[in-house]
Amino acid sequence: MQKKSAWEHEYEKPLLVTKKEGPQNFIVQFLKYLKKEKKMPMNDLLVLDLGCGTGRNSNYLAERGNQVIGIDLAANALQIASERAKKAGLSEEVKYLHQSIGAKLPFPDNHFDLILDITASNSIKSSEREVYLKESSRVLKPSGFMILRSLCKDGDQNAQNLLKSSPGGELDTYYLKELKITERVFSEIDLKNLYGRYFNFDKLIKDFGYPQVKGITYKRKYWLAIITKK
Image 1 (cartoon, rainbow, N blue to C red):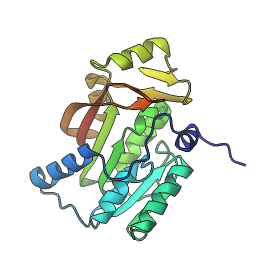
Image 2: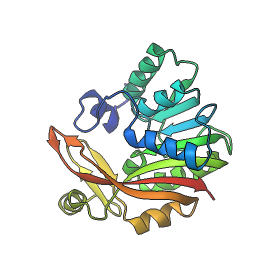
Image 3: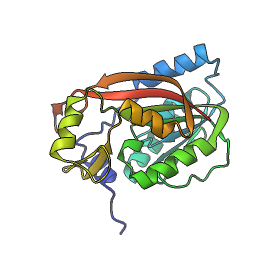
């Protein structure tokens, strides 16, 4: 029997993730921005959702007439996403693929109009991150956009505390012992330097949210970005 990943354990007995349905609010707002400011149609798009989880954003985009592929390392999350898609009559519009986002993607060059990375790449290793960046850039169309949400280091006291109390093995990482997951946080400079090798920043803002871990609410800061292929 294949060993379960840390994320599969997390979806089985959630300490951090939720199993909510419906898109995240900032996704809806960023899609409105792309439609209004960038004149991007919101239908007939080819969409890749990296670290799609239970398909909140994938199914939302599929409902609006787009072809979506969601990939995730947690097979049980993908099962939930697929069941929700089937229930909504979206089995032809959205497909789910079990693989790491830090591995080579099985898609041709310049294939997707829109890519989502919603706090997915913060938990991959630096070696995987390089593959993720190259592959995301490779499969994004020159006219396409990528929506990125990453954990913010700047001004986030909880991030600072975690970096001190439970440091990970790589730059600006901490280890969540109960979840057995390592996460990376980014300063603005590091984020721009890292992604700037492959992408241009169209929009970058700082946002905040209130995730819960074991019922305890923490205020966390995030980077929200829209980036384009160089």
